Image (cartoon, rainbow, N blue to C red):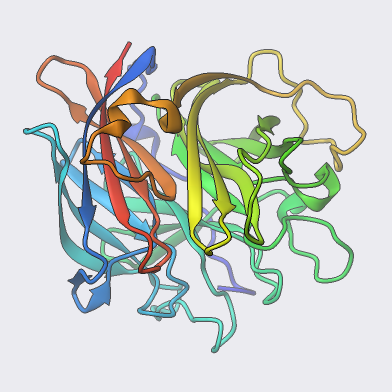
Length: 375
């Protein structure tokens, strides 16, 4: 859609669909219910299932959407529609169909060999109307593709685009804007469905260095109203990398967010540490982040050296330290990149699902973890 972005309608999502009475979500603790995996050779509608980087649940249709970060390499960029049955506690996942994401001209998105606006989808949320999905993609500096947010109908047809602040523009020259593969990772509507939050994975170049084993960094979280108006932007403080790598690489960043109310979010932080054998160990933490008295940094072009108050955060769960994860059913925690509330459990408490991106790597798995939300 480069050069002819879809025009926004009068409202990004219709006021008639707003759930003004929606209650804020509270998370006191999480109780592990069970886990399951999708085999790496699974196919749906002729497409390989993998790279699951975002999931969302629609109470209206009792349907789950799951988006792949396949850059149209193994199949056209797509999301899946399906079910997750929690009646036995352990999540039983079934995928009904693959939906190809279309550009405004009706064609699928291209891959890197073709060039153009190559997507790297990282998050997906049902529109409050239930008739479409919103999804975000990272930056590809080599192709000059900035992060973007799009709306597509349930059948994949292109509908709308969200105008993003100029600070997210990709610059091929000076090191400014989002780093390659560290663009928009999180997207979430507020419970009242009158605002949309976006989260970057890590720091912009001008906001400082990325996380190291000794120091963290900051990622910009941005809030819009239902007309696409910027309401505020805040600096989320990221942890340092969780262990010293014996291999070549390691990182830490935000992989997803889930709005709890107008000013609090559940944040997934993932730290990956490569071993000498090339196998990665993943350290996953869930935080409750709050705007509180944080500074609106939307008018601050560079956070490095600037004076501002970051968001606050409280640890909800460190998956590496859960006693339940010592059971044989969970021999590893993989690359968790997706989170969504699910249906209410029989006792009235909310369910929460985490899902992993296997990177289409035979050494990794597409994993689903189910939790009960304890208020």
